[in-house]
Image 1: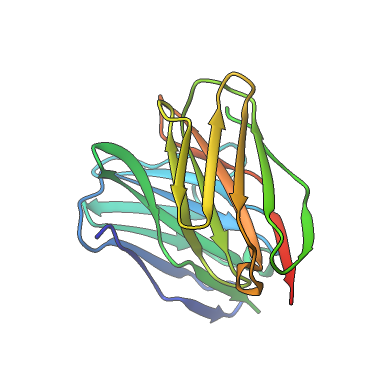
Image 2: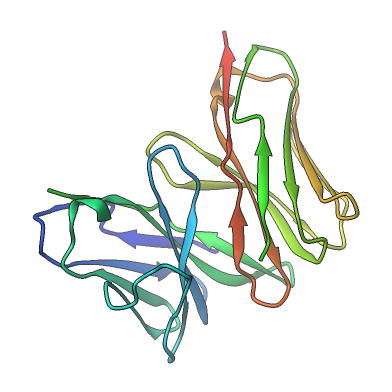
Length: 117
Length: 112
């Protein structure tokens, strides 16, 4: 149980295009999902907290108009990188908050590798 | 905000040696602490989760401890194997928002 999927796993796009990444909780409902970004040889940095039915909360320094987050259902959150540029190339990982053993835990997706040419 | 630090950044040991990985955090009001494994170019594999009310968790050759008063967690890997080579990340969250703050990781190489 507690499986989180991401699609696509890898995407290459041209500079200036927009890319949508999906994060799904497959066997549980998640009112809260999180989006992280990881640059090569660095750790995960939280970008935003996505709440079902409301606006996402962005961390300091993350442009909300560039990284659009939609959490339209209890099992799906999407991250759209608008007008992508090479500096947006990164590994994007989502997590979904769920209950395990009566306690809240974050379950992580496998990540999406974005390369902007 | 929780600040998480991992030392050392890299570690190389011969096969069979026990591994000790350190993680420190700044806020003792920690909700839980998780240890993850990440292979190159891959996502995260959750290894152990310690709730704030617990002092340690064990899974096979892995044991993780949590000392809130000193702001430290330690991951022990017994009898290391080449397959244990990976980057190990620790992450801690605060109880008011469940956000996780990650350390920079310790990259482990186990030499055959």
